[in-house]
Length: 169
Image (cartoon, rainbow, N blue to C red; front, side, top):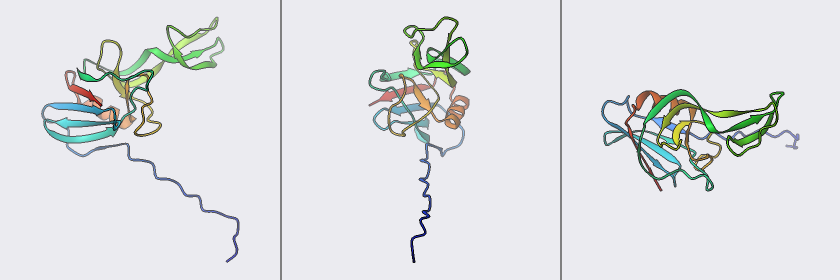
């Protein structure tokens, strides 16, 4: 059969970014974030009930390792450190701005990056929140733990303040 010049477009399947396999939390939840895997696992007691890909800090902005607890929760938080700079006309002139280091043009302003379903882990501003996972399995943040939006909302709902979170290599 002659080649018609038409080629079928093959779409790659979107990767599965998370799965909540268990019921709602009944007991004492905890979270374990593995920086090597770039995955978080959610437990109810000793039983794993969910997992998700995460995007943690890149080499220049590493995510701290250790044991933490969720100390603050906010549905609609904005970063006071990272975001964009807009000029006087509202046009973005810097997509990766630091509030204390990036120059703001006259009449411009700093706009903090949205961090929906914020769950604070450190006093220095590291937490878990909804955000892009551009390459599952690879770090991509300024130190926070980014979660897929739907999983961030579920974790925000299910995990109370005081929930232990361990971050390991």
